[in-house]
Image 1 (spheres, helix red, strand yellow):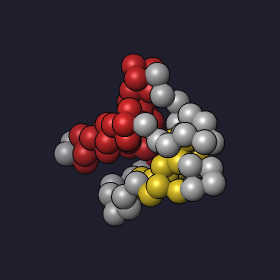
Image 2 (tube, helix red, strand yellow; image 1 turned 120 degrees about the horizontal axis):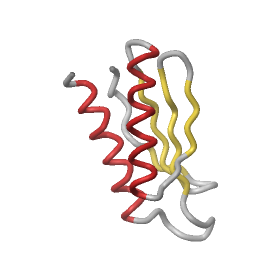
Image 3 (spheres, one colour; image 1 turned 120 degrees about the vertical axis):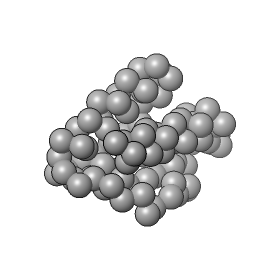
Length: 89
């Protein structure tokens, strides 16, 4: 799995973005299942777009005029931890 990109904070609209790449579709699906469980647990539902061996994740600020919250940054870190967990298997 590729972990080369870091989270990028973008403006207009304010958001965090990251792309994760995987060796195959099954590994990607396993990650998406774990990410869905984390989303349910934390109450955050990022935008996810995926293909055969990658997923692009976007975490939007709650409102156009508010900064990203510490909880949103923590959620991004938790997704990174899920990737690290999958990388070690």
